Amino acid sequence: MPAYAFSPAAVPTLPIVGSDALFPVHRIYCVGRNFADHAIEMGHDPSKEPPFFFQKNPDTLVHSGATIPYPKGSTDVHHEVELVVALKEGGEDIPVARALDHVFGYAVGLDLTRRDLQAEAKKLGRPWEVAKAFEESAPCSAIVPTGICGHPDQGRIFLKVNGETRQDGNLNQMIWKVPEMIAILSTLFRLAPGDLIFAGTPAGVGAIARSDVLEGGVDNVGEIRLTIG
Image 1 (spheres, one colour):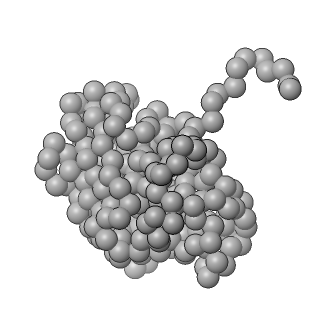
Image 2 (cartoon, rainbow, N blue to C red; image 1 turned 60 degrees about the horizontal axis):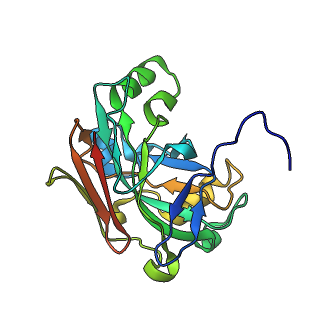
C-alpha cells in the first residue's frame, strides 16, 4: 500500500434502492438549459443552442433528508430539481442507440446555484464553478436501478418549498433525452462507471432562504427532501 502524506478523502457514495451496496461516484456532469421553458425564463432561445455541460465535484453530494447551512458568499441561492442518471459503464463516442446500456439507474437531484455569483460570472465571461460547485450543492436521493424503474422518459418532475409548488414539469419536455446526453458527453469526456448526469431543470427556479424545506420528486424514480439550516 502507498504511504500518503495524510489520509485520503473517502469515496463519495449514494445508497441504492433494494441493495445494501453503495454506488461509488466518479464525476458529476450537469446539462445546462435542457428544458425549453427554463431556458426561456433565463433569457435564452432553446431552439438556437446546442447542449452544454458543466461539472460539480463529487464531494458536493448530499444525501436526501439532510440539513445543510445556507451557502456562504451569496444572498441569492436558487433551487433546481433534476433527474439524475447514474452510469454503470463508461466509454468514448458512445452511439445513441447503445447509450441506455450504460445506465445503472436513476435518482432525483437538486442543483443548488448561487445565482448572483453565476450572473456576475456570465457578465465577466468567467467559469461557473463558484456558482455551481460549492459545498453541499448537489443533494441527491438514493439511486433506483433500471430493473426497478426502467428508463423514465416521461412523468412529473416537481419541487415544493415549504409545501408550495415551485417547479412542475414533465420529463418529456427535455430537449436532449438521456441517450443523447450520454452520447454527446462521451464525445467530450471519457465517461466512467460511477458518473452521474444531472439532466436539467424545468421552469420555476427561484430563491431559497434559511429554514426552508425543499421536497421534490420524479414519477417512478423517487423523492428528495432537504432542509436549509
